Image 1 (tube, helix red, strand yellow):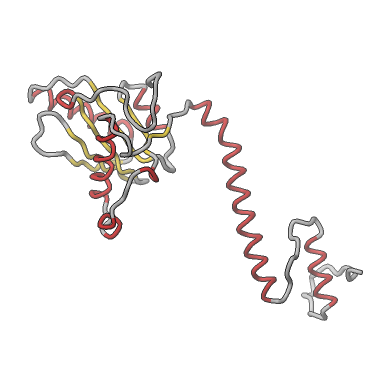
Image 2 (image 1 turned 90 degrees about the vertical axis):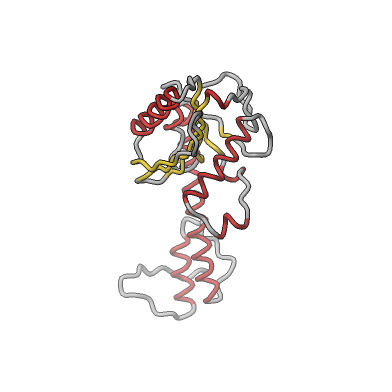
Length: 221
């Protein structure tokens, strides 16, 4: 990976006559790859299995075909949206001398027409425009995520998992509070260790019948 990195623009001049530029629209089963290949009259669009070696083989094939058309490829740059797939693919490609970047999805401007007619083909066209602008050094096209090492990503995992669990806990508490509010129970602290016993005590105090298997406790004073 490059030593210097600017999330808003590329620091390396783009020479399109000897550079393959590709973007990937990723799903669990298939990847759709759009590319600009020197010597090609049309922009190739290829759907492959979600498999890194297949992607590498496709890049090598396009490089060979560009060479046959009289263009010696010195650089291959690939980008995809940073999402659930993480950064493993970018690290894998960098290890094989292919530049790989993860685009922040929220940094790509989406037109109203694109929102109404969302397809994988339109997604790749949008990503390609944003990626080309970034490679040309133009700002405000998109923003790239810094690719962490495997050790850095592992170090972040516990905190991210905790954030996920806290978010799930908050959603559950809000749902329970909404249910309690239907019965006129407000400002109840569900975080208390004895919250369940307190709810049972409230039901007893109000004379609400309890299931046979409910553990009875004395009403709150």
